[in-house]
Image (cartoon, rainbow, N blue to C red):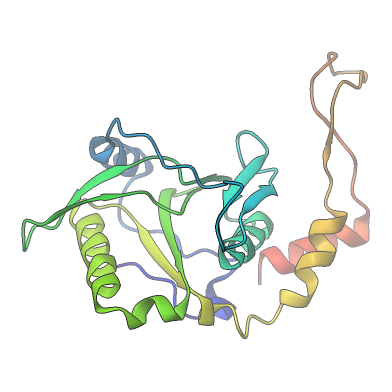
Length: 212
């Protein structure tokens, strides 16, 4: 089972080189997908924080989150040099654990794309594990994805507590380059993205964080 332990070691540097080809990972995930609609994540009601995180790595430039912890993880993934694309709550999978034959519908919190292929992330607060039913559900999900040869990481709230670079996250995200739409440049058509050029000092700090 692939799991994230202490993120001061793993993040933003994502563990890679799992012994499965990128194409095979994609095929394995595709074989698990159902036609069921993903439930609404961002709604006007509910007790937990939820909303959209502006992400340059998300296909539509915004990533959904439904907890403060998910937001923190998205911020880390946005800064990771290993993560090329982020999708949140992307689809519903039908998972079956080979040992028990039990099946479950599962919507990943986050799908990331790295140079070694796709991986799925589940983001949970530590109190979540106090429930036996939830522990059993998470174990079933992990086992079923392992059986299906799909890389899977569990990120817990205490994984982020001592991450040594967290004081830089807000500053770097605030200063990151952002596309400017509808600007005609020498090699850009109208409506095509152009990017503000970051400063040399910003590039150095971002590179330092992304390769830590």
